[in-house]
Length: 181
Image (cartoon, rainbow, N blue to C red):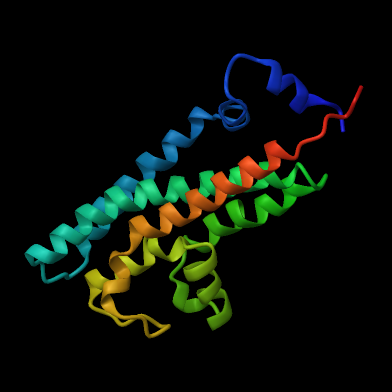
């Protein structure tokens, strides 16, 4: 409405880079340190029968989970920015998935109804960040009845979200019409 995206388009940096870097906050580093501390304490307190495959799953889950977490949220933010090409209130819709998804991922998915579990497994794949790897480590079955191999699909979930976000962003920029002011 105000023509602020027109200003982004005439700058020498890419439009997506400018939109994403608009809200970088270093205060979020503390959350990463807190999570690492809680994870280290939990590993010591849990009675896990450590095998080579479980160590590999932890290593892959930490690396992939971190990348996927950021890729999924990055994709959600890009999709939210993309929706701004067609609607005015897209930011609030984005917050439902980012802040709501962050809160949802703080608890085991078992406490939610089946439809919520399916949504955050297949549509917004936050279950692959920590829930599915934790089930494997603890030797518990998936509440949706998914096979064990599903827990190793972390990178595919991130790629799917990134591809969707890229497609949406390109469509939005391609069909963008200036405010004319």
